[in-house]
Length: 286
Image (cartoon, rainbow, N blue to C red):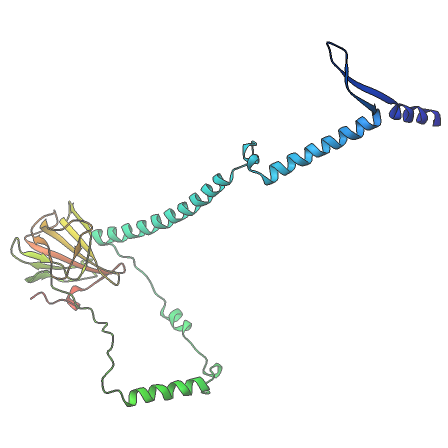
C-alpha cells in the first residue's frame, strides 16, 4: 500500500518539460517545467476563476439579459407600467359601466327596491351616556372664550350655506300627468304647443342626446350634486352630447316623437344619485 502511494506521489511530482519550437528552424522559443500536480492545480484554479467571473458578469452586468431565461430591466419596467395601466383601465371600465347602468335606469325608468332596516341604522348611533366624559378641558374653554369675544363685536350676521335646490322650469304649460311612484311614472308631463323651446333646468353638461323608439328625441343633462334631468318626446334637439349648457338655455323643442306619446308635450324627469325625485317639489310649471 505504501509502495503504491509512493508511485502515485512520484507520478504527480515527476517533472516534464513543455517546449515550443519554431517549426521551420526548430529553434526553441519557450519552455516550461511542469508536473502533473502543477497542471491539475493550475487547471482547477483557472476553472474556478472562470466560474467566478461568469457569475459576476451574469449577476452584476447587463450581459445577463442576453441569456435565455433572464428578463431585461426594460421589460420589467414595461411590465410594471402595463400592470398599473391595466388596473387603471379596469377602474375606469367599472366606473363607465356603473355610469351606463344609471343612464339605462333613467331611460327605462328602472329603480332599485332598496329595503332599509331602520333599527340597524339607529343601533349605529346608540351611545352610552356613562361612557362619555363631559368634563370641560382647557382647550375647549379657551375656544369658547375666543368665539364669544368674536361674536361680541360682530355687527353682521354670518352667511349660511343654502341647501335648498332651485331649478328653472324647462317649459310652461298644463300638467297632464304627475309624478307617481306606484304607477312607475317618474316624471311630469307638461303639455305645450309644438316647437315651444325646452330650456335647461340648471347648469350642466349633455350626456345623452339621441333618438329612441319609445320616447323619440331624448336629451339628458348632468348637473352638480349627482343631479340628472331628462327631457323626452322632443320634436328636435339643439344640443349634442358633450355640450356645456347654462340655466335657461334652449336645448330642444317640444314635439310629439316616439311610440309612447299622445300629443305634443314634454316628459320631464329629475334623478338624483340614481333615485327619481318629484320635479313639482322644485319647479312651478305655470
